[in-house]
Length: 267
Image (cartoon, rainbow, N blue to C red):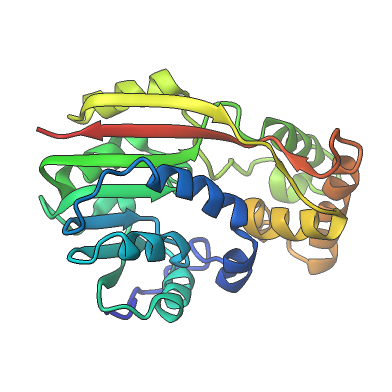
């Protein structure tokens, strides 16, 4: 197994990987549904594009007794956590940007869950993925899409306009891109994929209580926003206001997730 090695170009790419590993059960459950759609022979070479801490990479490894997985992520923290979690000879871990994959015609298939929406340029993303696939290779992926987290994002935008947070957030652009199904299909075809199928589905997630909601939203969703706020006291206040509003939802502490499913092959 390769140890992750990546130069530190600032903390914008980094995560609290131990918190993500502990809190990401919703992402894992959605990812397992994606993996259930795979028709594997067991000897494929696959890329897990945006492998995170490796919880789903482990499922791929188990399904490939004669194959191999490359787990790729931009975050050094995620890869260190994945290395400690996986400890398998069937996986290589690589630090790289999905827009600039260091592979050409290398994989039988690419799997990705909960990663592509963090990439703002999906035209370049899909071209990069296609280049990494062998002829006949396939993509099976899922990410945030459509009206993903619209309620939370509206609340964040409203808070960002208030005098307390405006100096830090009013000009901050969202770090996500949530494509619709038809838009994603068009971009996949433009990148050279065929047999393209896309769909958007609701995946409402309900957290147990205020503490779990605050911890989940802080570490999984709002990390980039919170980095713009200069003090921990103000960050806590920002999260407390979002959590207080979430308590009034029906059901309380629910997140209006929507998932974009993507599949296609290359000739």
